[in-house]
Length: 183
Image 1 (cartoon, rainbow, N blue to C red):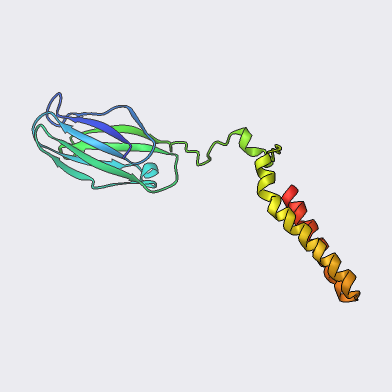
Image 2: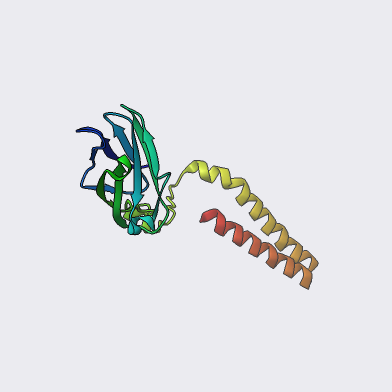
């Protein structure tokens, strides 16, 4: 429960009820019945408007001398809502009204996003002429050159259409590998 509505009982005499003129909450709330004198029976009632969106735990309560009793008011309908809560003591001898206004807390389920996150970033490809990188790729380059030489030699020796096709396949493979290696 988000709020507590204080109700003072028997402060200035038997069956005296002291309530604030108005009360605001942002959701379900509690009514705190604080008894300053002799034991007392208290009846709580929601008017028609407030009763459409809220329910009391119970309407009749016995509050011991010098004690406080908390009564829950659960909201179950559409908000915002307003209405009146009637507090009665002494079997109708005294009564008081509280104007209740329930406004839901403004919630934002949206997560704020920085403007920098809305623009796409392209991967940075920093090329530096690192001799270590060239050294690591040297065996691949040598293997590609050897495959190319072998394919050309086989094409010249066999002198056939199949050898020419094999040479073209090797050339395309070496070209694709070089493209990805140098990119």
